[in-house]
Image (tube, rainbow, N blue to C red):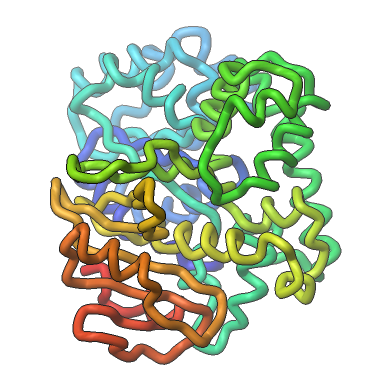
Length: 388
């Protein structure tokens, strides 16, 4: 079994909170991880899956009485957002016996799950987000990054026996997501129209978000497109990278950038059928940028927040990391191995006053380009101590 980076943090949370919510996209391995940890718990473990009719019926009748039988156990409840009434019962059970690690709640709709538990479990629950396989989980310094970039990190896509089956799995995942998952979350729309929207979104991956323009192309309103995006973000399909605009002396771009979180899904939507096709993919640069940003965000230490930076005169930076109100690092992402610090990147560093700045490319050995700019390959950046 592949060791997940989140494992130690999850165990720590269970030692310090009565309930822990492990949230993330469907099929990222939440259930597998939760079950694998059962041998490390000192108490017996009970597992219930609310997508199973039998378990749903057990917990929907009188959940307080039923779960009260397991007050000395660790209870894992999968797809917990399917039973909203459960949260108030969990609060009562926790207040009756406040023991850390009593409940591990697995969910695939973060805002929905958090909205339901915000009042009921406030102060009693901590959340962790689980992502698809990270490069550091599946590779080493000799791993061909290209395969992970192309296949993405969903376990079934990454572990598929060949590239054709990996692509088939991703195509079926997208279909199920549109036809089954989004309607459950409450999105009522034509699946054909929404599939077209996903393809349009993939075509502007990593670009400035313009809901009105996409709406016109789709034959609907900008507000409808914004609603679509909200659902995609809430179900971990996209990441919305917001602009940093704390500099009052500059005219700054205020539209966010939108990235499809998993580049394997992106490539399925855009028809990149083989990893060998990536170098000639028209959007390879934006795809690589989104891949690098996604890998960095998964291991971002607490207290560091990601943004991008762009001014009206063209000064821009792919990713900046901010602690509190202070920008601490500017990061420029390049696909090639021959790099230099662009004038815009240097201007961004001057604007923000960051001391630690990086140009991340495909596979360079780390070296200092200038006193405050380091060039480093992706693997070296992720496995080094640059974010600490």
